Amino acid sequence: MTKLLKIIFWVFTSLHCFFNAHVYATEYDGSTFIQINETKATKYESIIKQSGLLAMQYVDSEKKLLVTVTKEDSKDKFPFRCLAFYKRLKGTDFKKISEYRTPDSFNTAYTSIDSDRLFTVWSTGSAFRLAVFSINNNEAINVVLYVGWKGSYELVHLTPNIDWDIIIPVGWIPGKGPQFAEVYKWDVDKYIRICSIPWDDRFNCKLINGKK
Image 1 (spheres, rainbow, N blue to C red):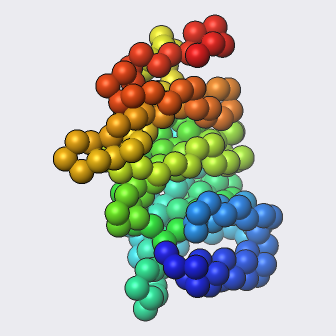
Image 2: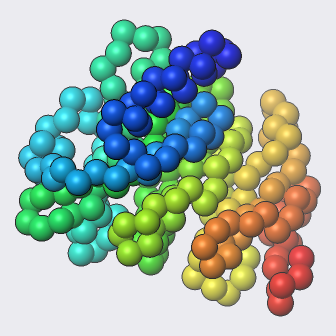
């Protein structure tokens, strides 16, 4: 994205935040995550009938938190996508509590085993981005990992715990693949990078007793 497009995107998002009672917005390389203080209820029927709806799913088994992805109507070459989190108030009433706006194309989304994280994958056209959102009591949403790569990332278990470790390929060479791996581990409420290691040795990167 050019510098001019980034400026236009930021101005548009700032105005969007101001007029829709958003609490704060954080920018991530041209994309924006927004916490929302919205009191108005939205009916489920209105949510699923949104224009440009690309995907939707409940994050939790009790169906208290609904996530949607929409492609906004626009004549621009790079229309924005919006990942929105809706908390159920009662019955078919929901309220939007946060959203992630990006010019990247939506690829896929899935939740962790404990439904406390949402993994989302986006395409920039020449690479991919992984944005992971933490979920606390189906209400507090935060970005806990935001990384880009070429090729395919991996979810593995380098230690006996139930949480996935994330391996990101780095130093991609056409015809040869990635040269290095950056390994991220879940640490209570965030992801931390525990090592950068040659790609073929990536499964030897472990965190044991707090040591690399």
